[in-house]
Image (cartoon, rainbow, N blue to C red; front, side, top):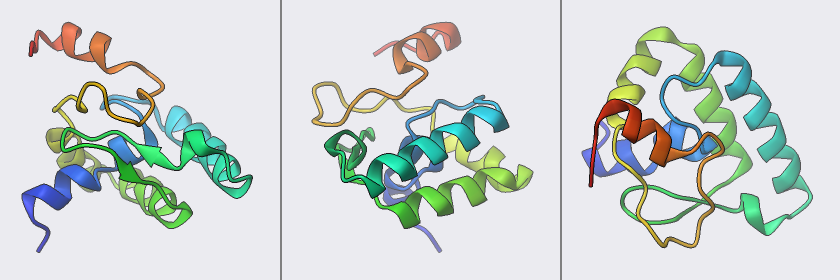
Length: 110
């Protein structure tokens, strides 16, 4: 069984830098982009933001994240855990689709 900490740190939405509600196309495109960047050794792809701080990103984690989000039941569970905003000021880049706008739209404040 996965701990709550692991559910947050390894959440596919955080791994891919996307917010819940991202389309399947956006998920697939972001994964391919990240895999290419990781293969080239680009620093911007090596770290991702979580509410518990930055985490290292690996090609395997990207592949697992996409596989998890392809399953509707697993995706729903991951969406529930991905409602927390990554920590401000972390070394990781902000997610592609912008967390601030996503949480403002949900009425979630800090």
